Amino acid sequence: MHEVSLAHTIVLIAEDYARRNGASNITTVGLRIGEFSGVVPEALETAFEVAKRDTLAKHAQLKIVKVPMIAFCQSCQREFEVVDIYGIASCPHCAALSHDLKEGQELDVSYLEVS
Amino acid sequence: METRDITLSVLDHRVLGQREGEGHLVQVEKAVLSRNQTIAEENRKRFKDAGVVVLNILSSPGSGKTSLIVRTLSDLPSLHAAVIVGDLATDNDAQRIHKTKATSVQIETGGVCHLEASMVAEAASHLALEKLDILFIENVGNLVCPAIYDLGEEARVVLFSVTEGEDKPLKYPKMFKSADLVLMTKTDLAGVTDFNLDMALHNVQLVAPTVKVIELSARTGQGLEQWYDALAERIKHVYA
Image (cartoon, rainbow over all chains, first blue to last red; front, side, top):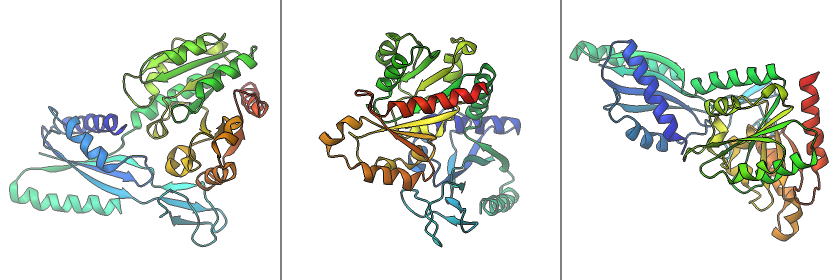
């Protein structure tokens, strides 16, 4: 459950940016989470409900955009989306296995909505 | 895709703002782990400047991290080594390492399921890094959470014992993909557990196609030479 630490860090980042913008109430925290980020969005949402208490984000909702996992095939010299549930990056064109992930590991706070 | 989403939010808010006269959007674009990453890079620089090889040792609980480290330290007495040991609670592992010559520093995470770069920075401040050849960081036994925390290590070594299921790499692909070296441990028990080694190796390769795998047993010593060669190679690299 590293989601607890992550939710706490997300609240700290959100409060920091809200204060810098003179805001006292965060209504939305927009996150970008890669399919291969190692984070379970549902667990993060649960942890966030606890982490946000008594902070500027106490009324905030998370809005999560999931980023697909994209790998690069050396043989075909092209990118492809990894749809395998185990994260096995097998090229749909030549079946070669790739160890080169281009996207899908993101874990970013992308924006806030404040009032 | 995410750009479009943000643009839509901006538009929504302009409409909302006009209607209600309050609320606005703040662009952040910050990695949640950026603070950890910054400290990890500082650690890495500190380790590099001191000329010490730092390995992050990761596995499930009970895969043999401490046994491997203790055996390595006793087989290579001339190695100037230290160990940072992370555990949720107790210092039992540090006590085992304390019986060897190596210096050990215990981090009790107090329930936190992984080590973070700041914990390692604090622990490393108790060590004379310049006098060391190698520093092992024995992470908390867990194949999930430690995967996403860079500690500033030079390489990640993931242990996978034959008493676990052959499908461990498929269940924890994030961890195995992040590995620089996989050690298949407790190979002396493979016969007892009906472990299908070929299938396990195949699964490692599916998830991490380029990773090197060494099969070993810290109890019988089988395969340890290859592990020691891999260590020597890295230590030589630092002094080169």
